[in-house]
Image (cartoon, rainbow, N blue to C red):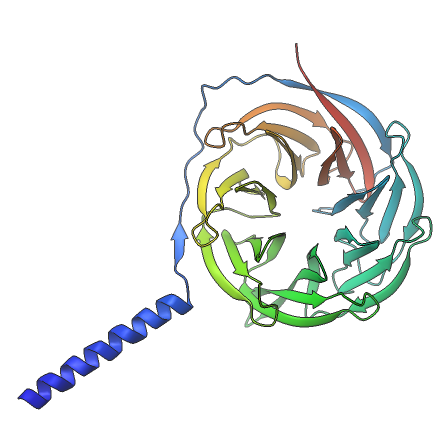
Length: 350
């Protein structure tokens, strides 16, 4: 009898130990889906002023846009990377268009190079020493179609999508770009669904999927990526924008989600905006305003001075789908359609 009791006790201890180990190894998923709340706040409305524009075309987006110095770099689908001189925002001028293998869907610029997520073309690296004639100097193949890219230091983070076991999957891949001519994948992490948004802060990558999930991944060891948290209930995420302790996720199914990421191991959904006319594709932030690009051809402005109760305060009708958004120097730059550029200024209304 004593022997049986000891055996049972040892079995229970082993079971509990394994359960604890699994919990520590695989962080649990939290669920949060606060309903949009009608706010009593009445922040000042803003009025849009068109500053400058170049031509646009049409694609379903999102398509990336990056700003560096006096240039805007636009992912322009089959037109590749489009470079626009914005030194005079009233008269933006295209200085070059560089085709790449595949279709340019997202772009990040760092250290004099453009890193383009080019769908079936994988990651393409272009030297921007002469913006009027960018030159491809390196590339890196991915298993699936590369759709999003972010860069920090000597590492690029890229998401590619593919089908596996009759379902959509994505991999976050870490690429060593210390030698831009020979980018090399050094680590990866596979997740179900389509990772459409990436943002990097310190040792963490924050990623959103179209399948209602938000992931936090520890990339301090690029060769061994570790998921530290996941949050279900962020809708059809199309991107991630970080500002301070908050993350903003444009949601095709609910417009904008605001998350508290002050504790990367415990992200929380703080609020969801009221639906506005359109479907969110991209976002940019400046101070307490988030600028949200819509599939239906709008740029909407959301006041987030109180992130618990975001309020729409303005909008602008773009010529095409507002596929990408970037903000700098008090101006909002929109990847309008398929690599077109619209430059806006918003002022407090009367």
